[in-house]
Image 1 (cartoon, rainbow, N blue to C red):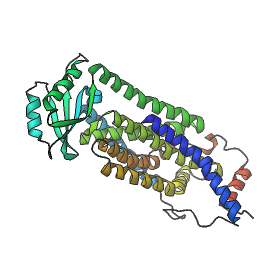
Image 2 (image 1 turned 60 degrees about the horizontal axis):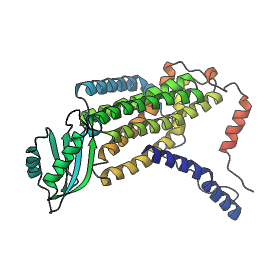
Image 3 (image 1 turned 90 degrees about the vertical axis):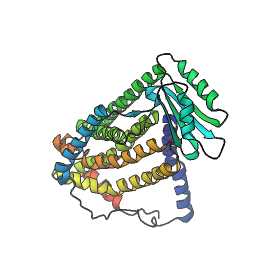
Image 4 (image 1 turned 120 degrees about the horizontal axis):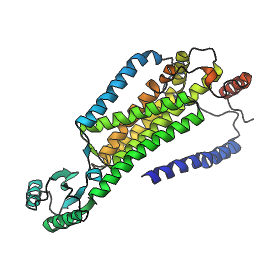
Length: 361
């Protein structure tokens, strides 16, 4: 999943800077327009001036309580860990007849005395999912479970998928999954600190940590199965939230250079309103794809997709109501931002040029 996602990002950037540019250059050379036709799509009017910062007195306590509740639920209720973390055997079966008899399968497997065995319908009435708990500390015991289940059910059912995870492997997966999330948060802090200032770095990590904790709390409340795909969802949410936050932070840094005497809360409101249309557009397009995957992707992908939907919503919220207003708590000032003392006339000239229509004549 990680390799596929990384390749997708690299190819997207490559396409944007090569093929898209070539097609645009070809069109300009062919049509020779005086200016670009049409105008940018915007979901909010240019005059929008929502005072987001005045809501920080409510958003901070609400988010803090939600994070505390998620942590309490994690320890009190715990997560519904899949076999990736608990160890055991998972078997996906398809009945050779029209429907699967769940009670019969449960009865036949119960005679094997394998401990906790869960049998549930999976997708269509012909498909069922069997989960068998870990059989102790001997890794090859799980292979024996697969053999017993296969011998018991293979006459009436087709074995579509079998996953076997021993206790040693499951412990390693839990450890490496936790380290992956921690490493991602540290990498974010280093990157933002290098690109902006320490206030931005801490703000981005707090906002991202907020999204991760609430997502895990959602798993605890709904008791969705938490597996390796859930870790992948959490890490993807981290990337999405960071991307959204960086867009807002970039505009804040730009406005800090342009409006040196503007009060910081007012400047933060201006920056968020400037990027609001882009934030809404990105969130909506992502949600459309995720909703299609949730309803059409089947039950295997349902926990991953639902976590992603939840994470996109929470990530959009945190970039506006957590990442930006937290800069006020850290007493951010224009003089602290790298490059803010550069030639102001040059910055104003660039800003003015950006608002002018493009002329190819």
